[in-house]
Image 1 (cartoon, rainbow over the protein chains, first blue to last red):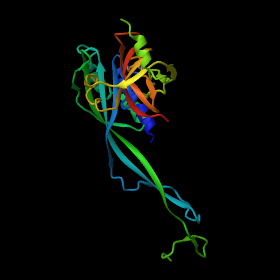
Image 2 (image 1 turned 45 degrees about the horizontal axis):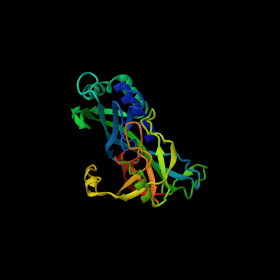
Image 3 (image 1 turned 180 degrees about the horizontal axis):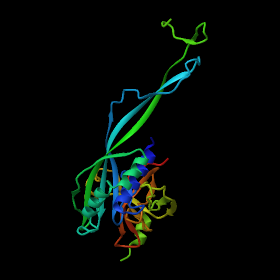
Amino acid sequence: MSWTSIENALVAGVKAASGFASGAVLWTGQPVGQRAGSFITMQFGELVAEDPLTPQDTTAVDLTAVGAEITHSYRTVKEFTLSVAVYTAAVTGDSSALAVAAKTQNALILPTVRRALGAAGLGLLSVGAVRYMPAIKGTDFEARAFFECRFQVFETSSETTTYIERVWVGDTGLLVFPGVL
Amino acid sequence: MDLTGVLTSFSDGSVYTVTRTAKRTIDANGRATAPSTSTLTVRDAVVTPLSGRDRQALPEGARGHETRLFLSPVALQTTTATTEADSIAIDGAAWLVITCEPWALGSYWRAVVQRVGVLG
């Protein structure tokens, strides 16, 4: 799992769902200063790891290979929220932040968008309610609407825990485990 | 009444380097691209403390920052939808231009600058 590819897939998904062009969908927290026109910002929220201590996979090891290291991999199910904020100059109508957020909220569950997200290892769990919160910007109103989505993703981490120190071979030439014979 | 000459006489001869940053663009993946920068040199500038009244005019949350008045014979840029704020090297630190407006008494620009960090 790569966060870069997850971020890219999320941006592509929101662009496809909202119809906004490249450059109008961006991650928050970047030093980009003021933005002009309508745009969407995205931000990761809570990241929860479920059952992180159960090893899900152990790499295949040749048990006759003295000195071979054994690596355990831990595949963890993670859930995270994604906050999507829409900013538009239009405060009413189909171009308003409310309308764009509602459209994006709907379109995120379309099969093509979900399939594209799935290709990046992302499972869309739920799409939250849209909140419309216009605010004063300068001397005018700016339309702002927000909603959150929940996603699931698998993250794998691994570590080398031990190695094969000795191998016993019996009279038959077969591998023998100490204590078994 | 033009007081440009009077203001110029207050200059201590320091030469200030201003770094001008192009507006960052957003790529197809929602990430800001590294901006290009250029520098310009400002002479005959006057740096003074900021008055209490000017400090009160700053946005809430920015009044406690180290702030000075930079009187410049050239116009400086602030952050807008199409430009990034200029950064001025003063006493080995970077100062960001918060506001810049024409000075009423001569050919100078009145810029409020805030210290943002030590130059590398």
